[in-house]
Length: 137
View 1 (cartoon, rainbow, N blue to C red):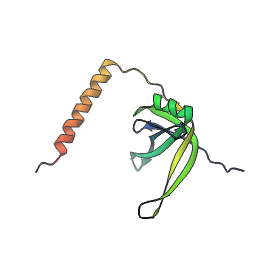
View 2: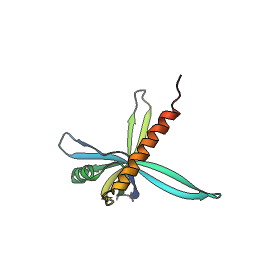
View 3: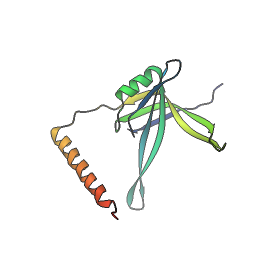
View 4: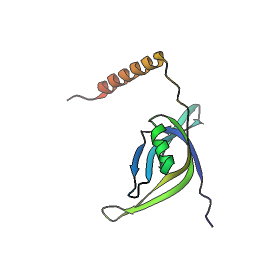
């Protein structure tokens, strides 16, 4: 009998999904999601971000690859899987991933022209700020 192993996580794709194929031709899609948690500490609101690697298989992998893009909201239902291996020095390593059984993508809404202009201005301001913070010698 299997033990209970179930997880539900909501968040946003931290980067674009990657699609690969097994030697037998089965599709595998992987993507990380960022899940935010807000809580109050003293008199300020704090934000805690957790990142989770997700893996989808077969038709779900193909659909996830087609629908997913960086920043898109997503809800994942699946199970936890521990991967184990030995590194180059022979030291045991492991990580936990989510093997998705169901993935829901939040709807995408077309951006208004003013939203696109604001995004462009914000991006330009961020580049200027990043350049200003780079020390010159």
